[in-house]
Length: 197
Length: 197
Image 1 (cartoon, rainbow over the protein chains, first blue to last red):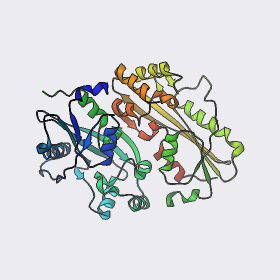
Image 2: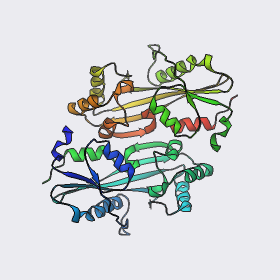
Image 3: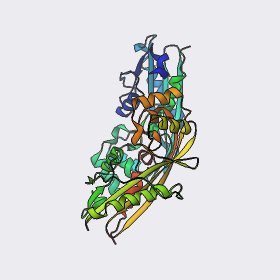
Image 4: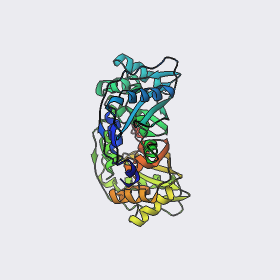
């Protein structure tokens, strides 16, 4: 694509196993491949808010260093739900998911994605915040969602593009795609201005 | 579905040929069928803003009256882009689409959907407004979009779920699904409280 033709010299790698991130990046109509390296999503306990997904996006990038050559452009990302001073990551089990959704019900939380674009010679890390307001969720709605969907790979125990997002998300401020897991407009804008030196 | 079981007595009809609206309503996991009646999208010239899609949603509903019986629950909707005091409807041709996208570029506009839920004995019409801010679009980006996509059935000449939405929409305030054409969370909430008397 003309607007990103300065990236034609790169093999672009998306370092994520999230099918939402893959779909969003496909939407840019640029070639890339996916390579998954499992990275433990742990971080120093003193980190709060935006610093957590920024740290994790860079930690994920570090894990790919051995795979990279001069033509590699790597994209890694991490998304958290930040609510009342706490991180909501991926739920451990149904009880944990229920607890998260009850806590998000009727309130506004932040979804924060950290993104790291890196080559062997340069690295750009940024974050995007979206505010999401949930309607009051009935216990029967939470139960229905958890019985019919599998939010165990999703921060905050919900997929905004699933039934719970349709019936529960009253209001978004910021990027919807960021809530899905990748702030694609900002990523495009960073890729447009990417220079490898 | 338990939360909408009071609607089991109805045949729900979606009166729209928009595949986005169909997909969004499918997401509620309730049975419905689609019936399309073409209605000319004209309205009294003194109407402005939210009154236009509310009027058109009701005008569309009126066209179905002969098809309805006591068990019919009809959903009709109309979406407009409202920008600088003017309506942006579906573009007539590529030049019209280019003009609209140039006008939306780098600015915030409103997407307004009017929705009408009706049975033979009751009618509820409401509207939902979302604010959408576009990044500055390059002429080459507008050209690329119009050469590769077909926005001629879309108000304002763009699909937020398409490439142009990925690379161009910087910020949304309100409902993302409303920008796609149906404010599904509000519709669900209205259906939950629907009483046919």
